[in-house]
Every structure is written in structure tokens, then in C-alpha cells.
Amino acid sequence: MLFTSATFVVFFAIVLLLWHLLPFRFAKFMLLVASLIFYGYWYPPLMVLLLFSGLVDYIAGARIVSDPAHRRSWLAASLATNLGVLFFFKYSAFAVDNLNAVFGLVNVPLHVEWSIILPLGISFYTFQSMSYTIDIYKGTLKPTKSLADFFMYLAFFPQLVAGPIVRAVDFLPQVLKRHPVTYADVEEGVYRITRGFFLKMVIANNIAGSVETIFAHDVSRLDLWAAWMGALFFGIQIFCDFAGYSDIAIGLARLFGFRLLENFSSPYTAGSLQDFWRRWHISLSTWFRDYVYVPLGGNRTGQWRASANLFVVFVISGIWHGANWTFLLWGAMHGLALLMERRLKNFWRSRQRPAMPAALATTLVLIFVVFAWVPFRAPSIAYIPVLAADDLRFASSTDSLFLDGLPWLLLYIGTQTIMFLRERNPGLSRILSPKLEMWVFFALIVLIPSATADFIYFDF
Image 1 (tube, helix red, strand yellow):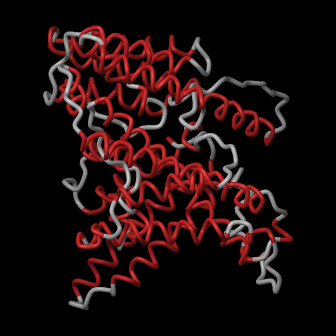
Image 2 (cartoon, helix red, strand yellow):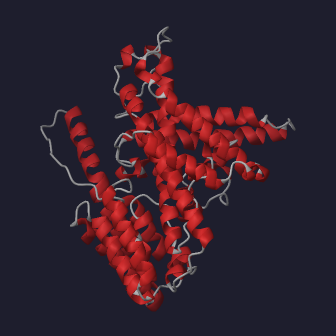
Image 3 (cartoon, helix red, strand yellow):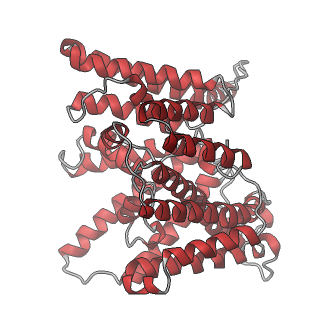
């Protein structure tokens, strides 16, 4: 069920009304059932998978505390179940394809056909479920006694299929009682929902056609300017698509009285790659930091080991996004670039040189991030237009390959600049208020036709 569909609008209106009218204990049960219906609307049998993974983690979390002699075994059972399910559904076909390729190289007549439905949001809810048992094992969370409360945490529909990834320690306390929804909550919730729909429907959906055209183009006939514009357009598309979903999820939750953590904070204005990853997909970045990087030793193991830990985390992060070598390359590029950035900063400080101008630093970070989006978007490792620079050229004509995307690029720059200035200068809020922004976004949503496109992160 897409947020942008009429079916969802009706579904949400009914669920929100019942939530506020029913007694709390019935309202909680209704919201849980509604969340499962929301997830199963696409393909009902996959609800069984979510319930199975969640039940294993609920039992494992309880047994980690009640059976301390076998607490490691219960944690291992939780991790094995979640990672096993994730590998089977998301990576088994990729593994089989690569196995076929290896056997083909050595002329062994073996070819296995394998295809499987990728459950919606599996990468998000498995990570969310794993964090529950890991936090209990670490002693930072007590297991919940209510199975319904646990599944409310796992299946809460606004953020179920594409985040933000929430932590049980943040969410479970919120389901113990109904929190009053104030006028400020309604105002903020409607503003975030409207902004999310604007980012998704007006910018992301409409610029997607230019991205598709450029990345589907014959590399030998693609000029360098168009290739770079394609990468830039995709950078805008994926941000508006994903940040738009997060905005809608945060806004919807706010109308129920729930608070979800921010997932984006103007990432393309970052002055360093480290700063970029503090601003981009914050819930995933902090998840990898807390549950992979720190357990590996983090910065406590010496310079070379810390560097290796960082690189491993970004390679894993890359492959988390999809079963393709292109995602692994994207993660490795960011990992190596962050290591280089650390070394350069240390070298710069050791020479007591003045800091790089902020505008230049932000520009260099943006160039790298846009460049790195190419393997992320490319259909295969063999087709990466910008990286194939020897086959590209600057052409005198820059036709409709990217001209169709320019209006959405300018609209994105304009609206983001206004929001950036307002956030940095509270005095401008009197003129550029969130309420005014909301009405502008709403007008643009109504007036500008939107192409139809699923949320990008549904595929992850």
C-alpha cells in the first residue's frame, strides 16, 4: 500500500480516527492489526515471515534474561534467524548467479535457475528486530512482557517498510500509554507529511524519467556533461524519494502521538564525508556504528585496525542496500574516501594549516557523493557511465537527455535553499514560516502532475 495512493489515504483516515476514539487497550490492538494489514496488502503470505522473525526475537530476548547460562546461544539464535532469512530472500539469487558465472569460467556445465520474491522492507525490519535482542544482551534494554507491544514496535506501519529504523529503547516506552496529540503535533505532522509528498511526488517522481533515460543510454553515445547530470539528477531523486518517505513516516507517527527520530539533516550541505554520514540515513548509519563498528573495536584498537573496521562497515553497508556488486563498490568507495579524509585531516593539522573554506569543502564533498551515486544506480558493474570516462566526451549539444530534468533541479535547489536559510536564521521564520512552506508545497503537489514511481528504498 503506497503512501501516495488513494487507498492509503482512506486506510489512514480510518485508522487514525479509531486510534483516537477507541479505549487505549483496544486502540493498540487495532493499530497492530492495521499495521499487519498495511504490510500484507502487497502480498499477504509475507506477513508470516515478519511474524516468524519477530516471534523468534521476542522469545530470544526473554530467554537471554531468564536463562543467563545460555544467553549467548539465544542471541546467536536471534542473529542466525534474522541474517539467515535476510540472506535467503535477498542474496541467495545473487549467490546462485555468481556461482553459475564461476562455473562458466571453468567450462563446467552447471547452470541453476533461481528467483524469489523479495519481501517488502525486509532489510529494515530484520535490523530493527535484531537490535532488540542485541540491546537486551548488552543490558541496555529489558525485554517487554507484552507480545503485542513487541509487534507494535516491529510492525508500526508508518516506518515499517523503509524506516527510519527505530530502536526498542526509544519506541517501546511510547506504547505504554496514549500520548495526547496537541495542536503543535498536528501542525508539525501535517507539515512533515506535506513536505514529504512534495519531495516524492513533485521532485523525485518527475526527475526519475531523466535519470532513467540517461542511465539507459548507450555509453558510447553519451557525452560527459550528460553523464554527470544524470548522476546529479539521481542524487536529487534518491534524496527526495527517501527523505520524502521519512518525512511522511515521521508526520504520520506524530498524528498518533508517536515520535520517530530524524533520518536526514540537509546531507548535501555537509562539509566533510564524516559529516555527510551524520546527516544521511541517520538511523542506518547509527545502527551500523552501534552494532557493527563498535563491536569490531571501533577506534579503540589502533589506527590500522580502526581503519579496517571502518572499511568493513561501509562494505557491509553497501551490500545491505542490494544484491549487486555495484552496491559493494559504492560502499567501498565511501569507506576508502573516509579513510583518506581522516589521513588528510591529520596531515593538515600536523602542519598547522588553516582549515579549508567551508564552501570549498562542501563542494568537494558534494562532487564525490554525486560521483559515487553512479555505481549505486548503475544496473551492473559493467555499465558505469561516469567511470568510463575514456569513452565519453564533452559534446556541443546537450539535448533532452538532461534538459527535461533541469526544472526539477532548479525547483529542488530553490526549495532546499529556502528551508536551509530558515533553519539557520530563526528570524526568517516570520516571513518563511513552516506554515507558508506547507501551503506552497500543497499548491505545487496539486498543480504539478506527478509521474508514478515506487519508493526507491522499497527494493532494499
